Amino acid sequence: MHRFRRILALLAATMVFGFAAGCGGDRQSGTTAAPTVRPFEPVAGDQWLGNAICYGPHRDGQRPGGASPSAAEVREDLQLMLPHWRLMRVYGAVGVSETILEVIRADSLPMKVMLGVWIDVEERRGADGVVTETFGEAAVANRREVAAAIRLAESYPGIVLAVSVGNETQVSWSAHRSPLDILIGHVRNVRAGVSVPVTVADDFNFWNRPESRELALELDFLTMHAHPLWNGQQLDEAVPWLEEQLEVVQAVNPGRLIVLGETGWATTVHDQGEQAELIKGMAGETEQKVFHDQIRAWAETRRQTVFSFEAFDENWKGGPHPNEVEKHWGLFRADRSPKQAVAAGVGTP
Image (cartoon, rainbow, N blue to C red; front, side):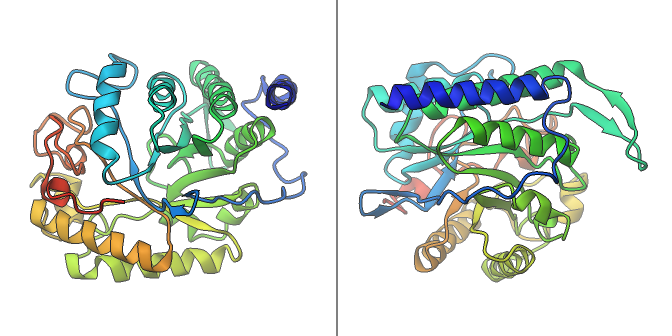
């Protein structure tokens, strides 16, 4: 029976792709009624899984579009994560994500996944809405991501709990902004092909704006990024600041479940560039541990799903300087040794 449902879902998605193939999605974003909401339930039996983790699997010498982790490396990572988290978020569907899902299933691991769909820039438009530049390869890659997500979500039932389409494609400062109608087209294509809830991940500074409502109505829940450190907060201000951002976004999008898809505290910050100007709080392993302990306790009390950012340091990110902040959000170092926050088994589920 499951195989029959999967075939029907894939056929439906294929029909939508056929309509949208020339434009990157359904551009008539305002003509379809809001879908019936599918509940997002981060549970396994009677265990709540809402204290979750973001997982970028690429190690030193690896990067998206380049060398990928092996199954053995993924297996090692999963064994390190499982004592602390039972729900992870990954950011793309093409490539290593299938290895992750395969290892989880082959080893019967109690890990669930929010699967990502990486959406890159297909076109740019002027202030008048006229297209000024198109990127055909990106459009093809985006459709490939959508197709992979549909296949994986339906091939790994019970492991994939939700699909997140796009990552920070709408906030004003994004380097890969997507026109909203193109993103909505991809959301609809994914939702036509899967049975799990569908979301979009973006910064609080998009979800707190009235224009976010059009997208919110297409989704089963909202995934919001909010980083106190990047937003000038001191450590003792971090959790109250997060609460405030959640309240604002909830007021703009009443009745929508909001998941905190990224928040964390870096252990190193470079003393030059934008990070030196914007980051006011003290970075460090001690500070990260304080924040991590606080956010886990807060999430548990509120039953607020939180994906901590992130499992492992990723040295391929950011600029060449070794202190570049984007390299240092991990709760484990890039060599997989634990930082203070997880060294003593803090947060064991």
